[in-house]
Length: 107
Image 1: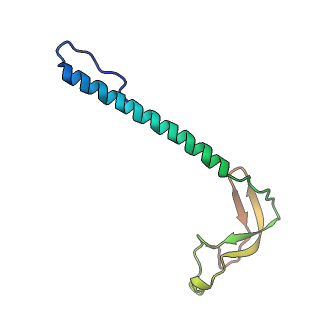
Image 2: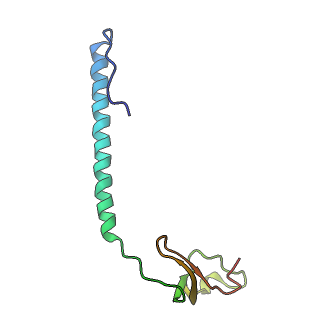
Image 3: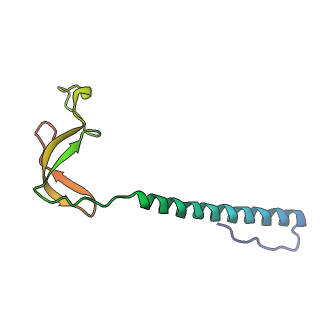
């Protein structure tokens, strides 16, 4: 971002004043964006929940929201949560879990 204007002796005073006002407005807008971002981050962090402690060999339910359902099943008749499925691999730091799924759900 441009912080200052180069001063030239031949720059008309109207152009100089316009440039200074534009720079001041850009700085104010930038500061307002940073202030709002900090506020939004604080508000969002208040709403976060702790990661549940899920270990290998635990049983969990799987949301069918983003699953590719086999063509033999009607999508409106599929349950919202399928399972329980056994966890075979767990990486809790990244919230990644590998499940032991049915053969028809594995691609």
